[in-house]
Image (cartoon, rainbow, N blue to C red):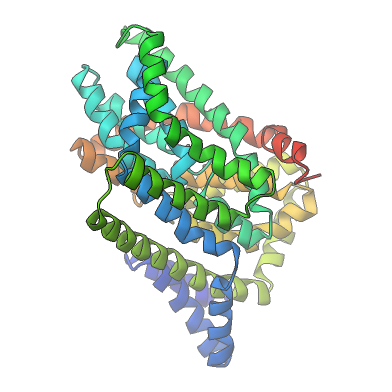
Amino acid sequence: MTLMIFVFLAILLAGVPVFIALAGSSLIYTHVVAGIPDFVILHRMAGGIDSFPLLAVPFFILAGNLMNSAGITNRIYDFAVACAGWMRGGLGHVNILGSVIFAGMSGTAIADAAGLGTIEIKAMQDHGYEKEFSVGVTAASATLGPIIPPSLPFVIYGMMANVSIGALFLGGIVPGLVMTLFMMAYVYYCARKYNMGRDQKFSFYVLGVTFIAALPALLTPAIIIGGMTFGWFTPTEAAIAACAWALILGVFLYRTMTWKQFYKISMDTIETTAGVLLIVGAASLFGWVLTTTRVAEAAAEALLQLTTNRYIILLLINLLLLAIGCFLEPIASISILVPVLMPILTKVGIDPVHFGVVMTLNLMIGLLHPPLGMVLFVLMRVAKLSLERATMAILPWLIPLLGSLIAITLIPDLTLWLPRLAGLVK
């Protein structure tokens, strides 16, 4: 077992893709140490991706790509400017509000950073904001993408932890709003400290016009969440409905999408989905080995010998996740760690829906940092900043993000109130 973990870390640190590190280290153990037949290994890997909830993955990825290419981001941004551009530090607030709206469509932090980030950073620079401030607020607000539903990490977590994806989606709404308030408060603080002004006057007329233009796009979260809450859709069917709605907007209403664009979007979706499923399949084998060798059980017992206080355990797990999030992408982290951590959560009475939101937020914060922070790398390219400058620009924004994480960790009702109201958790 020690050999497998050592090989996994060695391969990963060598810069090899995550799924190869997972599969390679697992295969060395199963063949060299345990002598497990090949057909059992293949069955475990195939079984890891033979899951109905996983069908939602390609459709949520496709929906996010369609929204990015259908001219929806510009309309969302214009509406956000009308809502918040009159406040001090206006475009900072607009940046966050735009991410809140777009998070209800994309489901990933990278789609948020790439889609809205390009528009937001350019607009903030045109209005005289410092490039570092623009990059920092854009990176921080991108973490809302997987917290406010729909959420690709929630789908993977729900499958791995055997938790209702609908409950996770509802559970992310209030924590997303808490994060929004923390970040907007930090923008207000920066605006007061650096004497930032207002970017435009408030106008009910402009607000009405931009709202009407953005209304079809704003209906997307209502279709997804409303459909699942009322029992009209499963998460997979909700993802398909979101794709259909995005196609209607892009092809028939806004008329901004061509067949050539649709082909490119489809190929990008296939490529991304293949990468996700390779990681899930390899991580399923890795997790199965950890379970059958009782590593997960041993880790749970070792931690519980130190303490049985759920808050101390949550603190230790948070520190672990924040560290791992800097080195592993969220899908791989969830697939590897959930089988290890679930026995601990069960024994101390931590609700798995609450923990799903806490885990996802930890891993989203990891996307903002070297060495593998994908949001950081996307915004470096968009803003044409060096790695050092981009990293330093993002560091102050850990204050509102970690503040949100502490609040969400210590107050489970922030996550569980809506799922309880809908009867999805006790």
